[in-house]
Length: 184
Image (tube, rainbow, N blue to C red):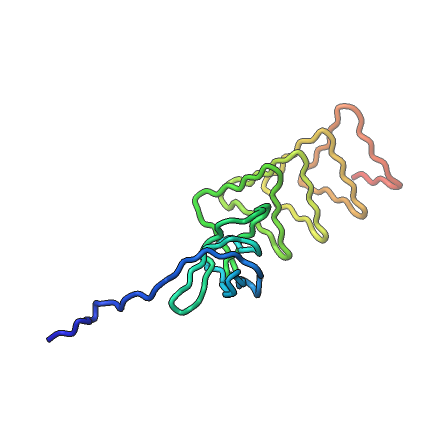
């Protein structure tokens, strides 16, 4: 006689409970105290970081671990933080990605920020463009074309312009002023 339990038969699933709860205290990173006294951890798939006061969907799992699966409601969602528990890096991979904001977009890092378009064009458009570098500002280009209504350049120590050929033209005046002028 064969046993009722064969190698292909799975044991019956243990119960999984879903309940609604409210977060009353933010504990250690990605752990929260719920209004029923239980402690819950942010689930990996819950990408919005829970906050105190959030109404959340909680799963009580078979190993008695409780996870926050979803944020159902937040009273004042002025700002939300995307946060993946335990991850050191978040990567968004799609053929096209758009970030749109009515007021502002800020990219901040304590270390490096890299923006590259390896085989395409990188366009920066704005009413004003400011670039500040504390140590070095290096540009390497094949062709540099610039157009300006007014172009002012102020250098404290040395200004060197060098080329195989150099042309300076003006429709009216060219002024060269200095204590000593050497030509040739």
